[in-house]
Image (tube, rainbow, N blue to C red; front, side, top):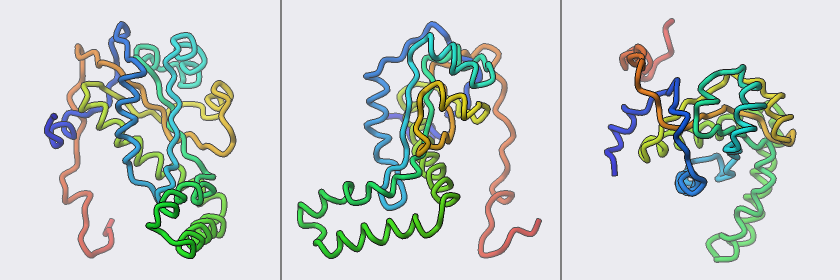
Length: 212
């Protein structure tokens, strides 16, 4: 296994991919088997992934919805990361196993369902949307690190028409698009140096407010 720190340093946003490289669903599913261990609030697992590996769809409607960015066409696949705004409604189902195994008693189970449900419903639609994007983004970052560890390059994208994506992929209104990730083998020729990274002192504060 590749050293984790090296994976973190080597992962970067690929701008151009080798269009002849194919990625299999088996390879993708191996990554998703690890992605499922991503953290999420109350273990609600808000993230949902739509993999676009159909060339006609990827290079047609998805390419158009992504503002005709070439990396979508050259990538082996495009992956739309969604956040489920109704994820909290599954709290009972997700905790049934704990109840059936006796890890959680019926009172604890009922309290968990009630408290999580009220936590989301009391805070309204804006909070549900924020939570969906927040938790989907945690999952997406883990996916990109896993992909790099397995020898694949990725690029997270926010430059796309969310409604056009929704229409092209028939996405329910309960899901909010968090980002689009393209994956493949990067075309190294002409790769630019990594962009400037702030020193720690510029983005970390200890026990104080940000002064400016």
